[in-house]
Each structure stands twice: as C-alpha cells, then as structure tokens.
Image (cartoon, rainbow, N blue to C red):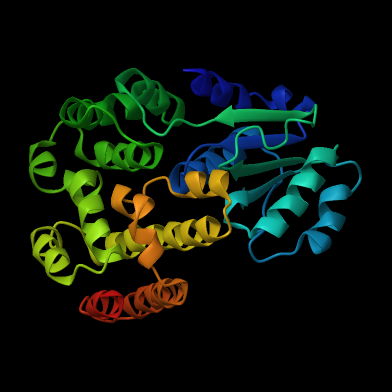
Length: 315
C-alpha cells in the first residue's frame, strides 16, 4: 500500500518544502478522486492552490506564472492530465518539467510512469487501477474523519464482498453514498450499485459490437443494459472508448507500437486485434464530437433519445 503512505505524507505541510514536482501516474486518469484530493490538500495545507487546464492554456503563456513568485510565496499548481495533450505538446511539457526547479510545486497526472525521472525534485505516486479491501478501507480512513469512516464502511464492505475490488473513482463516489446510507444499504445494493460499478464484461462486449459496426448484435445487447445506467454514464463511457479508439488507430497506422498499447487499455480485445483496421478515423472523430453536443443538449433540457443519434451515426 505504498500509494496510501505517499498520500498520507502529502498532508504534512513540511513535506512540500523539498518537492517541486508531484506526478501521479496510472493507466487511466482518476478524475473524481484527484479532484477530491485537490480539495483535501487545499483545506489541510492552507497554501494558495491554482488549477490550470493545460489542454486549453499554452505552455509558453504559463511559463511566466510557473517560474516566478510574488514576495517569495510558493504555490501549488495543479496542471491536470498530461496524457490528454497531443504528442508534441506532451513532449514540450516533459522537457519543461524535467528542468523545473521551482519556485512552486506542480502537480500533474500522466499515464507514462516516471515521466520526470530525470528531475531530482520530482516525487512519483503510482495509483493502482483497483483497490482491494484493505486498500479501500485505508483510503476511506485517509479521506474522511473517523465518524464518517465508521458510517460509510458498511456500504464499502458490502461492495467489496460482492465485487472484490473497486477503482479509485468508484471507491470515492461510493464513500459519499455510504455517508448518506449508513447501514441502510440493502435497497442500494439491490437496485443502484451497478450504476456505479458496471458489469465491465457486458459493457466491453457492447463496445466491441459498436466499434465493429455489428448493428443487430449491438442493439440486442444494448436492450438489456440501457436502462441500468443513466445518459451521463453512457456519454462518459462512449467518450472514453472513442477517445482511446481514435488514438489507437492513429498510433497503429503510424507503427507507434508502445503508444498504441498504452492507449488501448480498456478497449475491446477484438478491436485491438483486428477491428481497428476497419475503423474510419473521420467517423470516430465526428461521433466523438457528437457526444459533446448530446451532453450539452441533455444538460440544457434535451431528451435521452438524443443518444440514439449517436448509435445510428456509428452503425
């Protein structure tokens, strides 16, 4: 449980005095957990905390803020997920981070372990894909006060007993449900838990059918799953699948084997092996853009039937 020890150290104000880079790494970006961890650090450390979206802000513009301080004040800058950047921008950031020596501390995530290994001031925290029972309980203790931990552990134990493991994001979200439910968890476990911890085998069979264009097979499987999960889940799930599929096809076409293997995590096996050759990058990109529109329209009063447009566009 090295990552629990690493997280615990970060709650000590003195720990930050020798750290100018903090890199979280893993196979996928745990958005919910790291967003919550930011808030935990803000409250505990009482340091100025600045969030930068590096997918929208250029490195050349940010260098001024990251390289200077006002009256010697050291801040914490949260940069987000470096892995979301195009390759050339990633490389530019990697070069900058390898040379960074302060005056602030920069926090970022990368799906490349040891991305800043040449920088002696960098601290690496490798986040696990899954938490077992002991890891999950320790994480809850770290994130919540004792009285809240006691309340939310009823649901946590039931989930671990049924599924054997949870991801960081699932575990964090379930912790909030556990706080509300206490020991009244039966109805939640019977009717709602699968909306948070999906049956990944069924979902990736569904994804395989969609990405390979098998219309009849897709709609047959989708009929048994569509009512289990709300529209925001489907938008998030398909957005990640298409994002990974787009870059997987691109990297395979460019014979960038290592990068293709990395981005292919969580894609269906059939797509990784053969179906990627049949995929149209332009169609995948248009479909991915369509998901953003569907998400926007739904949040502004649109119907869930909007998602059907995406399926018919893909199939």
